[in-house]
Length: 312
Length: 312
Image: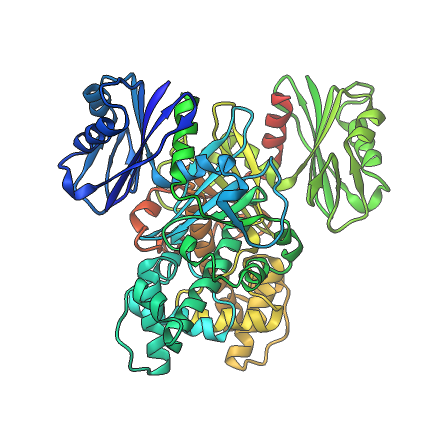
């Protein structure tokens, strides 16, 4: 089977060819250069497999997928499975949400594509979770079943933030004042880092400019406000990851993907992050058994898309 | 097939006979009167099916089940599948956690055993959740799969409480001071109602005695502290139920079981409870579609145990 795999975000679309169960090298195309996904797919195929036919297309889209259709959250492309299949003469085109693709990938990621945070031993009969702080805060699960792995999309990125001390009480109250509601995504995303920076600045009455996430990360070495915002980001993320692990009984492991965590993996205080993840009395012993890792694979959706293609 | 079904709590054990796909009338025996579960099962069988053989036994236990063994959280009984099967000469004895049994029951509960809270239309392809404030705060899910419903036990009752305004900030801080950590169960259980009462009394400097859950419920009509504790219990429970619904993408529905909610069903302000359940901006529209109900079936584990027996 030869399938075109695509991982399509608001800015870039990544394509790769699945042939003989191997994923080939990727082609990356800017979404803004093509009027439709079909035009970009055709341009990618010209480079990946010139003059050759494919049997299937499996596309991960950073946006809601429903009834065989999808649209990007941040760009004008629209997707329809039937139209894509007809355009490329393939038996089947399949659209999935990007976090569903990441969840499908979890059993296929080798340890070399992960940075483990602490110990923990996976229970292969229990759910695995993938969380992704990036543009938003994605969350999907994979449940092992007698009929194979079942992926469940979730809206876990929107649960309420649970503060654990007086300083976090003030931060959460500040997020509520700034955003209307202190849902997890309001702190645990690119926008969330900017929100946390503004809230910390206000709490200290500090005369710092509003900064976007990249500027906060860049300033964290010299600016105490940026440093405190990043500390809150990481501790609230670790606490959130622990809460979602409890909510799912996710003894199969919790995996951090998305645009932000891989960049922070090298400098992360893993012991502090792990300690906060486990800080769930009276369940600290249970939490100690849950594997936790950052996904450093450069394109982790592709192994998931390949698994979907192989299962069809 | 004839199976003995049992729903075993710390105080009472309920037994019923499943024969020809029908669940017969229950026998209720006090746990303290029998040295072992086998002794109580034998006493129940003498009443339910004197002189007859059974083919299977399926037991729900209010405590952790692992590796075919279980023990009660609040009583000295120990359970072992192999020993029970040998004692009664049955092909198979099966132990499950009580919330797993409740999750198995969800598709089998008729509307007459539910009190709906608001509208919402179940998506049959999405997970269903059962939450149970009682001695603790149980939580289990049912995921539809190609191989049939898959039940997933969770530790969702231990996620952190997420306050939504300044008054709840103070209540959560008070719970933290009283309990060490403000996990959901510290507020959303029988013990939790007592905790909330003590925290509200301290916040107001009110000279009221420490009260257990039954006393708080009983005093709520005349005592403003008890009334405020019950309001916090219900609003925090509705917010928790909404958060767990998001964490699971539970468009199959959220069901409130356990010892406490059925007693409050008649007097509950359903509109206020539903409004708090849906108060998850920017997901309020998504939440509006999620069915929410109180389970009023007097022994809801039995339909789940029957489903487990039938599937084996």
